[in-house]
Length: 375
Image 1: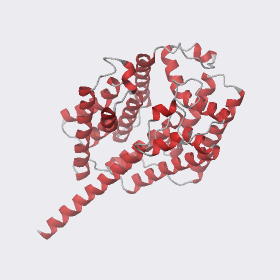
Image 2: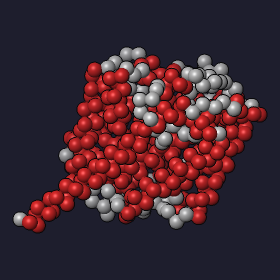
Image 3: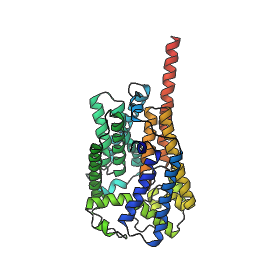
Image 4: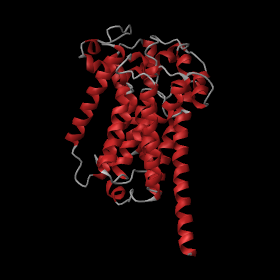
């Protein structure tokens, strides 16, 4: 088990295999859809094989516990950045309607000004990390943790809620000096699933309106479990559907990579999905439409490479910002079987911001040390 927990493929190959398994259980896949489904399984197995040959492994907990995250200029920079994110969250829920209290359908409605604010408030998942590792004041720590977990709930952003819970659980594991209590983590995970299911009901009802080839297992599941199964499997289903139809269009990929190139939501409305309201298609969906199976394979290998690089950075320079980069990259890898989150300009921008703040903090330290030496 310990060997498995330090392998990069834990974050990419295994979640993709789980998504494929969930799709097989949740849908009666038409014959033509099985080709795309099987290809994703082969991609996951290829990544597993590559991971076996590579020497790259995650740092051990004891190594990360020896890193001093608080009290450094990096922690000060991160705390200031976190206050800016918290301010954006307050602006988001103050100046714009709150979906959970008004109209749940507003969760995906962004006028131009709200879209700009949401680009910042969406980074609320880093608040629990900074709180646990850098903040010494108990009140400020509690505010950061509560904001990071509560903001996604009030705006009905299930994905951001998962990101916050994932980052918080990762830090709790790192900080714990005892053997990992998997039962406690399982309880936290179950609670997250229950909240997720309730948010799904608020946003879109009980799923009785689905007109897809659902399996008897899915139809006979409890309403909350249906949302979990759909969340895990819908991306693989849509990927397989578009594979079988041979649909080609590079617009979605361009829109995700280049800011200001168009609305992703409007482009999804033009794709011949079996059900337009279920519009997720795995991380590799845009690459399939743009470049076919070769593009999917290239995207998967590139994502695995970025994951490995984030681990190398964390091992060579274990700082708060390298940890944030790893948490972001590992999370989007885990979610790769659901929707596109890695190959987006917002993710690239977050990594660049972290690298900038890492360099800025080092420059401050160098300048301060030089001034002290000259004095």
